[in-house]
Length: 201
Length: 201
View 1 (cartoon, each protein chain N blue to C red):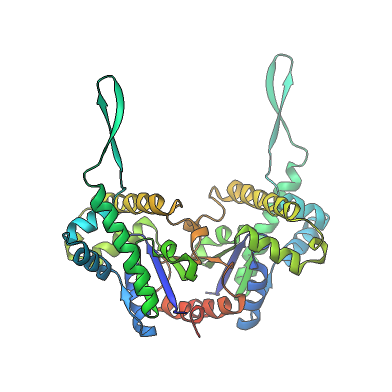
View 2: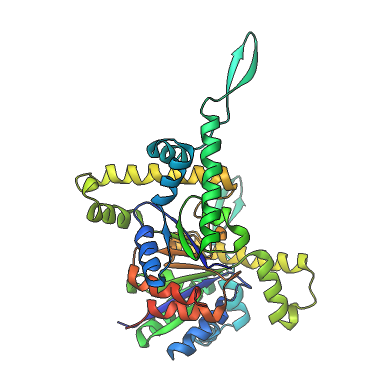
């Protein structure tokens, strides 16, 4: 069976850097943006739209009033949302079947649960995430602490809702992961070394 | 500065085994029951009493009715509780000052927070904890799943209340630790190897 590592991560915690470095060390594929690109190709939808759908909760129906009674009308976006999630599921299953790999986010821990991947969750203190965002991303370098905090919280809320919706579980709750890693006081390079013995063959 | 590792752990999760093996690998002292023994010696209280106090919440005052108004009377156990906690604090500080070491439980992560210890929290699924308790402890081998579950939950509640009371934080909440380790799917020996790079000099 292939050796699969899934990484859930708070925005700004360094989860992506950890995943990239671990993939380089193990010499195995690392899938992140690639998943969006593949979904967009298969569904013929714009990558930005796919990204937006995968960061928000899905609503099946809008309640509307007809005469004096309530009824439900299909949400026009429903078919697109359904197709995107189905494609994401298929693509992640295909990636895991093809070879050892690391998959970032997108409920991969849940989608691949029967394969018992090593499930990591990477997090950090708000202060650490703010500093990390500012240092690593030119686009965010000029934002105030408050603006960055709002951005980090908004992204976290989206990920938490999405995870809850598709898995029924709480995003970041320790019981859903094998290892929860706080990067506030630890170096990413040391953490890469720490994870290697857990995936050794 | 000495290299300190603190380990919070759910009962039955293997936190103690992880601590012992890590201490052997690093060739540094491991403190667990030793803390209770030292407190009992210094306070001249029975070790069982000390253990019981450290597993339950401390109540300073009982409200009592005098005439028609409420007032507060000192709890008779207060002085003992106060002495036990003060001794525990001093003993843990002394241990950390003496040499590199591993300290199990007892809010050591909080008591030593200014020394930035590596703070581990070890947990597992209920099923894993039940199986582990039954396999490792003759006293628990004959208990039913329900009895073991009750025991595990009761101990967890005691530790959570105690941690909340002394630190103001949530026991087991990821933000209070550097690494939260789920032993349900991982081998303790591999976890020992995983932690070594995080305390290398």
